[in-house]
Image (cartoon, rainbow, N blue to C red; front, top):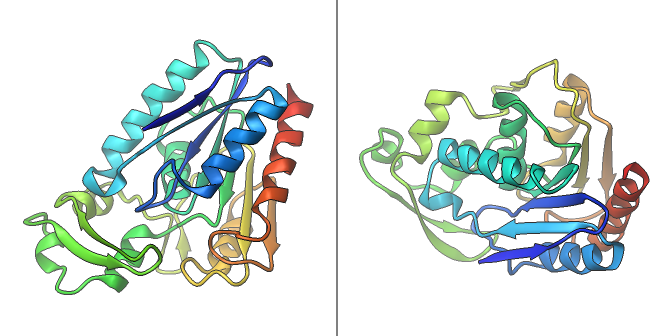
Length: 231
């Protein structure tokens, strides 16, 4: 499924949803509604992360961004949880042409998080079979692509590993991070660690959960005001 809204101001937000999520989530509906109110474009599609590899998703993202830049002067990325993991790796490994990145409780170590939920993952880590897990946050039973883990390990996609931040120090794309201090999925301390080691535009810690359930509407409004000032 794809959600698209054209822009009257030459700017568009590309949103990346989280793992085991889709464009039917609350963040997508909020951002889409506000995009229509503010005249800013909006694009989101079901990424189906678990059925692919991070490398394939990154290549797909590059194609999407290149296409959006043909019709818009500015492209912004907003991203939730694992979507943030993808967005940060896009900034690491591609020539970023986006104007800014907004991250909502981003994951910095998706493979590590999956392994905490996994039982007997050895054959999956070797790329020999799919991994079946119960995803606690969504309550879904998931099958994860057999090459998902090997792809992350081979390409060193984990952003934080062994208490070390794995990111380029020459990234000039503004990064704004919003993270809840009550997040039980991805600790806000990872965002603190990242912000201490990487130049970020801002890190906003909120008294909220992983979904930013009580604060996301305000965050979204702030984002559109930031974009309108820039365009």
